Image (tube, rainbow, N blue to C red; front, side, top):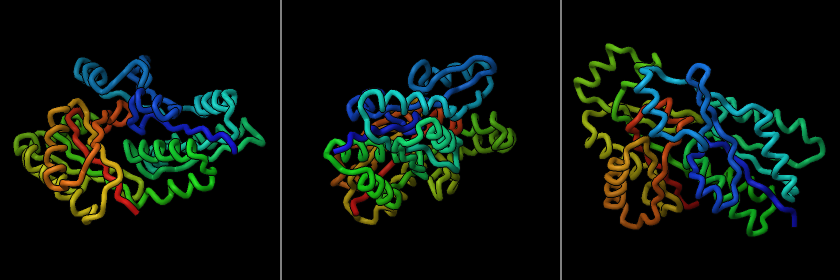
Amino acid sequence: MPKIAIITDTDASLSAELAQQYNIRQVPITIHFGEESYTTGMDINDKQLFEIIDRKNKLPTTAAPPPAAFAKAYEEAFNEGADEIICICISSAMSATYTAAVNACEFFEGKKIHVIDSLTLSMAQGFMAIAASQAAQEGASSEEIIALIDSMRERLHIYGALTTLKYLAMSGRVGKLAAGMASTLDIKPILRSQNGKLEMLEKIRTDKKALNRVRDLCVEAVNSKPIEKAAIIHVNNLEGAARMQELLQAAIPDLKDVLIAEFTAGLAVHTGSGLVGVVLMTAE
């Protein structure tokens, strides 16, 4: 039985503890404030990220890992006895990470490396990596694991609410005047993952109504199907995450084992502090 190693990137929102528990190797996204660089999951988290942003009053840039970073992860996995590797990347529509992971395979001619475009992000991608690791430990073949990942895509649902447009205004994606008006009117954008991208779905007034709307969208999306996996993701908003969990579990009484996870710095840069989101995966 071949030993299959699972690799992902830190946009999968997996904590170091979860990654260690499931023996998942993570290739980090880097954050750049001019000449200062930080490595997601190593020397920067969501709290530290926005402390720097607020101090500098400037957003950083993010960078996909270079092929060399994936090559290092592949080499370490093979050196530790892996016969094959499955690498699950953030959606190629949102990042060059997938391309870098594919390009790194050129250094390993004759080795079996399967690079998967998750077509999603955050804990939806993280759940894929966890499921792949569990299947590998149970003796599944790489073909079976890839088929499992493929089956998960249509069953994963992501919705979220932003509490502020301040950081989108800093990025230029929303004009400062529009952001100021939205702040005055207490407008909260609702996001969803669709077609490999994170996009704005609608706008709701007040935090309370926004979380209620996310709950309603989740209930509609799962359509009474059993839920296999659930996570609340947030950026520096544990209180909002706890409220979201209460709303979901009241609406879906059978919902158990809800994971609370940080969005992680490589993604949080693009949404801003305060985000609260939900990732749900229904049964087949």
